[in-house]
Image (cartoon, rainbow, N blue to C red):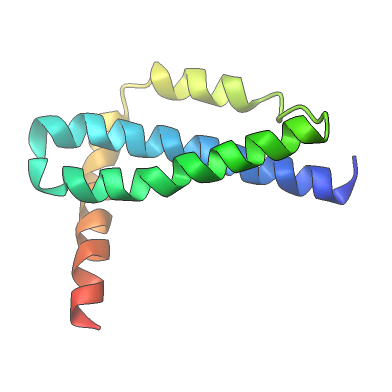
Length: 103
């Protein structure tokens, strides 16, 4: 595999992962933490654009994504870890919102 194809596949997988992480966080936030929903939606939007960009680049080069990408998505969709993980992520999101105000 050429190095550029590997980088494109890696960036594509990263975008896919980020979309799924933010989507899971939004699910929990809409139920329990309505105050951070807007910020999460704001952070999700560019990730969707990144994913589309790298998906289009892969298609243009006739390169398939990593074969394990669907496996990880299935693991996340069936996981009961969303809520416990979200409580940790909530703190980091709050910090990300707080920090620029202090700089």
